[in-house]
Image 1 (cartoon, rainbow, N blue to C red):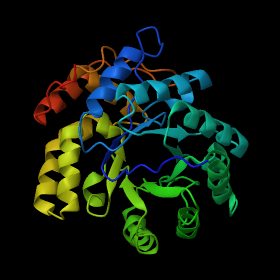
Image 2: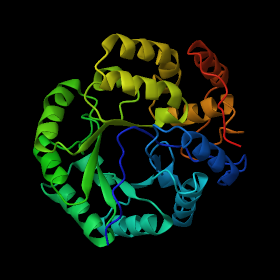
Image 3: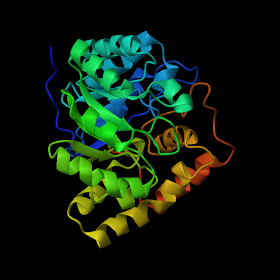
Length: 314
């Protein structure tokens, strides 16, 4: 049975999963984060259990609870998209079914982990998307991984996945602007109704003029400016887009220009503490706290960008 197709042509933040100081899921913090992000009319979904959400660090029951909590945070008004990360296709299908049962309306379909190291056999990604949709009816986001990995899909594979029933969106993080500039127009021409979203948190300016939306962890901490950035890019107003980009640049540097992109998740939590949304920046292993002084650095970057305390709905 198919799930109603949500419109994701806007800002789609990928919320972190808040934890208490002792490492348990902080459900009151999910309520604060989800209700705040969901209060912006331009936010078209909340994408949970991805990299920013530490989804693979949670148990199955915790994953379900996180989906349910984010659905409840907006009383079901804002669609929730779930990261589907299971290694094998059968495992991923079962994960997708749990997501549907918990209230998710779409799935961000991750590549099988082994493909990162060994690459994928031709047709294997298509089989993964096809099976998940046929068995669960979950709407799907084609997830394009960075070009430096062995699971970045070639253009023909992207076109074949995009042609499958249930695939209505693509989240592109190829991080190779030559490929972006040559492949995105082909996808757009072949599938005019495909919602194209950038997830280039650290390269937003270049990709902003070609997209229908954003699907970014960055949306946790700066939804106000990212909405402004997206609107300027969609209007093809380069000067306005560049101005917002430059305003955000101190934050981009503090959060995403770190030694490892994995540190970005920890930095997002530090920024959310500074904005008054989270009480603690606790993460789960294998993530680790940032070095001493990082919080002050991130706080200074937010101040430089004019980003203050969040206005959380009562």
